[in-house]
Structure formats: C-alpha cells, structure tokens
Length: 290
Image 1: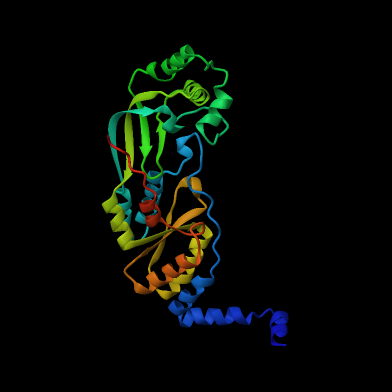
Image 2 (image 1 turned 60 degrees about the vertical axis):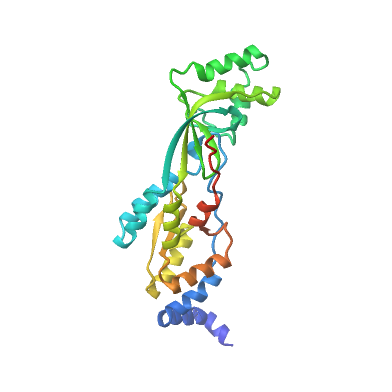
C-alpha cells in the first residue's frame, strides 16, 4: 500500500532516506554506497595500430594530468610536479631485428591498420619482394638511402618498438613481407631511444596518492559522493584522444578515504577502474642494454 502511494505521488521513500543519510552521516554513507555504485567498462587504453601515435602515450597522459592539476588547489601541485618527472629517456647505438618493430611514426594512409604486416599487405605488396636482389634493394630504399642514422624508439611500459621514419614506409613493409614469407630477417644498425618509468618517482606517487582511471561520468559520480564527507579529492584529465576517461585523485593520508577506495577497487574489476600506479608498476618490459 505504501509503495503504491509513493509511486502514485511521485515520492521515492528510499531515495529520500538515502539523501538524509548522506547529509547526516556522509562518510558512513560513502563507505556503503561505493559497494553498490555501478561503473562502466573502460575500452582498451593501448590500441593495436601500425601508427605509434595511436598507442597509449604515458608522456601525453602525465602531461595532461599535470596541467589540469596545476589549475586546481595548490595541495595537488606536488603530484603534478611528480607526474612531470615520471619519464626518463636514454639512447643507445644498437643493432635491432626489423621484425621486432611494431609501428612507425609517419604514414600518409587514410586507413588505420592493426599492425605493420596488415599495412604491408595492402600498401607494399606491389613492390618486388621475392629474390635476394629484391631484399637488398628494399633495404637500401628503406634505410641506407637515408642520410642520417636510423632512429627507433622503445617503450618500456609496453615493450613496443617503433621506427622514427620520415618517409612513407612502403619499402620497409615490403621487407617485412619478405621476412615473413621467406623466413628472413635484417639487423638494422640504429640508435634506440628508450623511454622508461622512473621507479623512485612512481614509488612516491603510489605511496602518497590514489590515481584511479575511470570513465568521466563515473569519476564525477564518485567525486559528488565524497565531497559532502569533506574528503579531499580532485579530477585530473587523461589525454586528449580519450576524453571519455579521467583520473580520480586523492591522497593516501586519510584512513577513511583509503578504506572507501579500497572497497571500490575490491568490488569492481580492472576493466571498470584502473589503479594507475599499480598498472604502471606491473606493465614493465625492461630494455636489455647489452
């Protein structure tokens, strides 16, 4: 009877009780509400592509997050400074198997391809790639015709190499087709630019802050849930290509906040909320400097 009257009158008793509980006991309410909060699935953040600029860029992510935090309260500025110092770069002259290269920097093709072989099958198949003479010619056209030493970038957070090319990589594609079809390979003399996560800086971030990657609407829902409890938190941008995602930021100095966010993580899977510090510490494919 009461449910019928509530429905007919447009009065939602459960919602009313929740509002009262949130107002009177905001921290108690937040601790329980995060168990039931619904979070959307996050699509893959590091897509497969033959173009490196379509991959996840930690540099772009941390720059975007840092810039957005610098425009907020100064209590978040130390995290912004740490994010700017997360990446370190080194360069080594080495020989590298061309079959290890997973992407290129430049291509004029309108269509995206999931990998270099798919690109080569469509864009380089007309280039002769059957004989030894073809192979040597394609090596010359792809690499030795360049005036400077070839440069390759290696990213330790996902183990991907990409060629820092300046011209359309069709001859490189023809080489890869011949490597696949004829069981061949070529060791490219190049400078390998290695991008790494600074471990000590990452440890400081993980020790002091929560950085939870979430769908934008879910992060703001969590933000609105915790603000009445006077628990300090902030929203930081991810990167421009994924405007659907943001970071939910909080310090790890408050036991109640820690409990709430640990509950959130335990009740949801890593396709719904990503602990960014943990993600970076686990996604590590060290470059073997030998």
